[in-house]
Image (cartoon, rainbow, N blue to C red; front, top):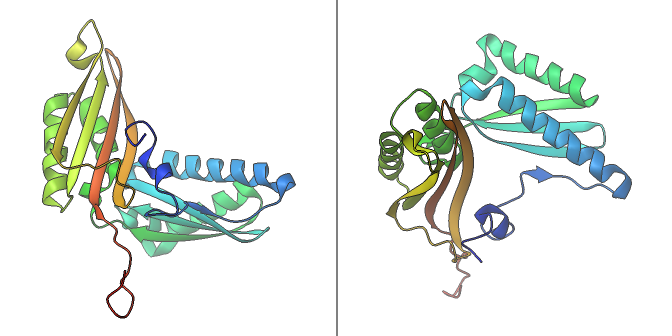
Length: 218
């Protein structure tokens, strides 16, 4: 089971929290859900060069939305004297019709963030870097950054081959069946002259152990 499903969804409530935190009744649920999709798509599309790892959304009330952007380059999102983050806030308010608060959190260990690793590999391949070199460099950087293990799959017409295939690179350990394992997962697509290449990345950050109670019991 752990090999087939998205490891993030499998671990929700165990080692991973939800990226959207709000409650809605049946009438409003679909509306809020589509708003979240639009917000994430807008941020990803317009600030792709800033290295967006994830976007968390909270709703403190039906008319207030808090957007927390995790990025490798916080300065690009904030802008000079906060001009860019204000521009983002205004545009998101136009998009949703609600009051929006934008917060930025810098991702310091970006070399072992699955989303950023996958997008970096895709960008390198699109710049005509050999896929084996792009993958091996990404894996090496992730392990140097402190990852316990990383697995990368690249599939498609590799090197322009007539028949599509998939190749894997694994370094360290990636225990997909262990629910307490903190595993990050992401996908990306590299568009080449031979077609699209799919990239999947799993990063193992270590096991999340339960806090010990007083007296030594877990």
